[in-house]
Image (tube, rainbow, N blue to C red):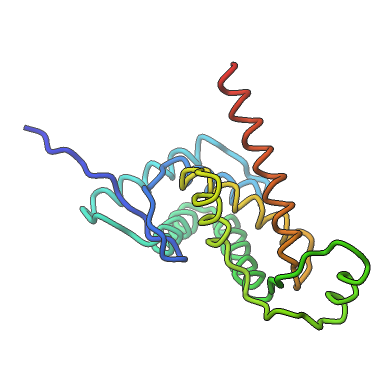
Length: 195
């Protein structure tokens, strides 16, 4: 009798645990290839198959997202896609750097006085370092989104905030970006339901 394979769990950098999703690996590899103008979905799918096969052959119940990242880098490097591996590593480290240098301030920008307060760096409340998991948890608790959708929205929000290239972010801005990205996701879900 064939044994049932248990779903592999991924331990994220923030400590959250979620199911391993093969298509996320395809997306990561495809993104790395496109960064160096070598887009090839077939290659991305083949490499992702290798990653998934390797992970399940380990017979582990869980693996860290960092380990998966290292495996992807190794596969790209060993198969002649060193430039894609370098681009992916650079993106990864830039993201970590931005997370470290971005401070979230509990301030609601409503008028010029609030903007001046933010500009003068005189914050009535202490700031905290950027933490995407706060957005994820908020989406789950306040809006009943599932973990995958919450993580996707939080990643979209993080991309938009980081693309603004600001180091001090008011919570009111984060809220507006979250609501905007929620609308995008809800619109896409409705379109899929009617298609």
